[in-house]
Length: 592
Image (cartoon, rainbow, N blue to C red):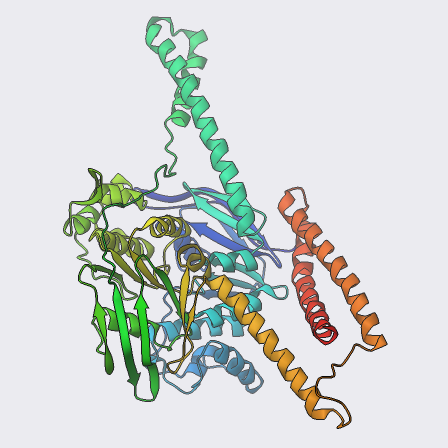
């Protein structure tokens, strides 16, 4: 494996705050690496260090000579007067590359290449920045939250684009489906240390839990031994001569291990004092449009008690507008929305909350309430809620201006929950939140005894939380689907397959000779039967090879060179499997 990047003994601090200490890792040609860490622990800082925009305290960073690195930042900055096309090529566009630029930008829903960057929204600018880094075709791609501001269609396109070929990649993302399907190595930055897992996200979850369990057992053993040694230290202060000095030094080392704090939550927060009546809200044939864009047309929906609904669809189809109409922030054109008297909304918006930078974190939350009544005589204080969402007691007394972008989003979420609503409306809640916080929020919503509406492009999050979807398909076309996002995609695939089959049947019917009866079905020819039999053998062989590679990648005993070769082979194997499976389906439709 050709090493592209080698990081050795890297340390970084801001004053008294140490982000990481003495971390080492490397990235080789063709590896696709995901970086996972909690908000505020240094993910974006590490990427900035690697891109040369941030300094570091100690260690070394070595790139392969003449390596071309492309960096996608969370908040890219452009000249507002330059065109989209100039921004994509840094004013050095070549005619033969313009066609490629159009293809990539079209996939990212940017169609006017002459439009000024200053006229684009923040999300559109992030997509132009993504197109820029893809089109420059760097040897090493470094991506900071690449799926933010992408709709589901764009995310799936990017997922396929990055998974194909021998691209080398380091990225930070909260999208766990994306991590699982694209990355073959996971780096976890935790407790100022980096841990390497040579597998996808599912493999990482399994091995991380093993690491935590082992660490917990180690701390428990140290605590037991510590109590014994502490008794000895107290009993024999006068006996600490030369022979006892080694045991005394060992005691202090043992004390460090025994007093380590494992940042793993042991409770699952459940509120039982949330009441909501049987009347929630009813959309009575509402309509809304902006110029030529239809958002809703004579839309009727009666929301049920305890319903957990997801809203999905491409950008610009009206998802956020619908939510704002429900909350009374945007007026309807026709019809009306009737809200139940007991409904108390808690709204988590994309725009976030403007904080007083000089306030302390705990004061931001206690300004809303000192505690939440959980029922049965139990109360949850503001400090306990913050700790549940991973704000340590020390962090709670930090000033807001010291928080990272992800920590601010997390604090905003706490302010919404502290209002003790019975109907949560969350518009893109997963943006900028770390995976651990997302897992906590998922648990909270699963147990939440009120109603929930989630607008999100995070497929994993939606599958864990919602049991029902409204799919916004554009121009007022809304699909009411009784299931989660994965079930919806399976249904769409099935409908697409039926449509293809119907089209083939129609084509066959239109080109057939008049002497055939309409109810006659075409049978497989001898050659097609042999082809189908061979396809079945090929698919079985390819699936066996795929299983063997996946087991080897997750086994932990494979050499680096073998991992590289397997990582190159796996996407090719998947493409071949897809192609042969699709052909087998086509033939099986004829045979049925």
